[in-house]
Image 1 (spheres, rainbow, N blue to C red):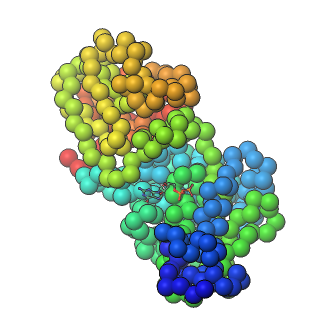
Image 2: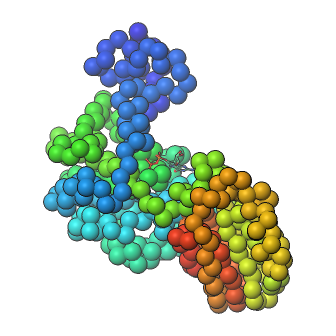
Image 3: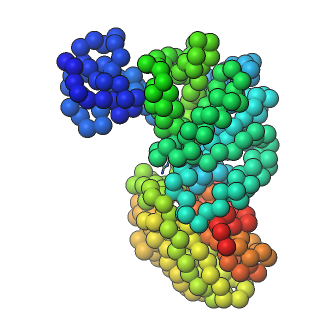
Length: 369
Ligand code: GDP
């Protein structure tokens, strides 16, 4: 049956007559909201299911494949979790190929963000992780912001070579690739994806022209991410869905902020000043006196201090404490995978308690003064 409906993935007209032809969708699915043609459905579905760890044999096999090629590597990372999503071992994986970093989810950043400072910090982090990055681009795969420039840069930098897209799970790699496919379909009639030969992982190969392709690789699991320590329900709360709004607290020393029941920030020493919190809008923040903090945490983690909810604190690793001496005004304390707190005046001693393994870093604030 021909329809007047179009696939939301690639824009092709949907039909359920010919399984081999483009736009095929089983007739049972044709009336559904957000219908996808079978190819896009599989593409999305596949990306959801395929995950590997850096130690998987199949993955190492794939690695050696990329290493042998001459190609461009596009590494997608999550702006809210740079530490958790930058692949420290990327050069071991891809050798000396050129790397472009797509820092995704820019739509979630507050309007006050200074892109130049943010890019500068990402470059610094990449360098610390041992990565040689040619280009850092801020994009939003879901809204399409920056995708045009990303596509142009990729075309320019690939110099006629294949492109490999790599990333940790949940950074938005599938969303990004779907955006690219959607866009290029404006120019080309249809794009057929196929599995990359020679590996059981079944990378998806999307032709760019007669000889070259964009190759989607499996999502890599990084166990260090906070996302793996909380329940699915809690993950929904801590993951920002909309632009993050700043929440400002004037604190005296010996006061504490709890970010849900996941982070405890003690303002140990320093003059009264503002702390600006940037976390998912649905994640509650509580202020208390430092002397009461320990008791409050012991009694209320999982209820007043949530997430984690009642059942999930058990998923969390033990909390560890780290002290920070802040000397510069406008310093961000970044808690990977959650958000950050901007300390406005500087000159403060701060203790951060959070689950072991979650990385905490200081950076010059990425917000405009
Ligand atoms: P993958 O595992 O890397 O392929 O990630 P997905 O493409 O499946 O995306 C993971 C989650 O992040 C999904 O809930 C997406 O809707 C969301 N997401 C992807 N890109 C963006 C983005 O640019 N902005 C926002 N706010 N969310 C995004």
